[in-house]
Length: 130
Length: 359
Image (cartoon, rainbow over all chains, first blue to last red; front, side, top):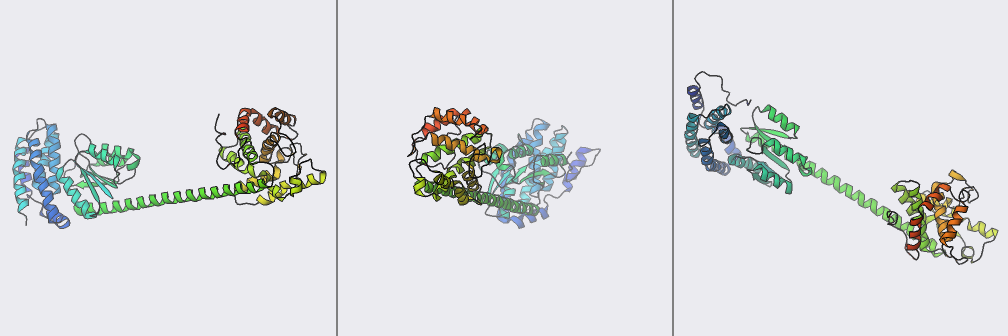
């Protein structure tokens, strides 16, 4: 239904190929982040990043503890949207796949673990931006 | 101006808030994670722009849109919906529900800023025009009311001037105005025409200003020459009031000229008969004669209402228009109420009569 920003094509070996695909996306979309920082200023950018870090644990735990694919969809969608908005594109893409699978009735533990790990790395990288 | 942002995600909320502040740092920004709280807030304090995410738990963007558009205060404020790229059916539905514009996630801050700037400028013009229209409408209403009040005051003063020279009292003017209105209403004239007749009727005898005192105040019956002079008051009244810009004063002129005409053509000054006599003249004739008969004058005692009623009935179709007389007699209870209630009044009618609305 949704035409995704990174359209996934039908593949044979989903687990391997999909994990491989989101990892080929850079951790951070530097152009997007630069645009945000230029326009809003450093203070606003840090405030937004802080807000993201603060809300991350609750969303991740909702994702990790989801007992059904339906319960997984909303937090995955929400976190995906905010990650994409602030240029954390690898995390966004990972969650996009997780959400798509959840819509198809699947809970993909491997993508949940990957998302958790990518989230940590993304925040570290974003905080270190000069 | 106030901007209301509704998104269940904390980060998006903060990001959008920062972008909105870039548009204009003087904007008041209210952010809501829970659309239900936002809807409650919007009911109390009308925003000038709403940004709402489509996908939220419990209440989605469509429901927020539907609710806001159903309320008069937020019926035409700009509402921007934030959707993922390519949500065509969601956007189509949102347009049907009255969305003003869309933003696509991931948001492009420069695009968002430009669009919000435009929408807020439009909103500001809209509010300004609305205020200006309201202001103009209020001013016109106020000016019109003042004109009407002055017009009525003028009529009251003119009628008062005539009264000073006339043994007829102020309460005659009040009663005959009420009777005239009762007849007009009984004939089925609309509210506006009835009001016009009610307010114009007091002017019927202003022509008496032009009649010498020796005739006007003569206690006994007039001789033929004196009567001829006395009868000039109809034309004099018309000359005083004619050709006015005001519909009310023109109506007064018509009444002054025609209230002594008789239905059979034997009246004055023009000897008109039947429907050639203006309707207001036929209406006022009944009201004026009935009140004159039931009032005392220097040269006569007041008649009883029964005797006056009998006189009117005897002259149905000769002096009086049968249609006017019939509706007057049909409203007899109301006529009696006015006859008693206004017996000693010394004031003039300036507002719509309360008796006309009572059952």
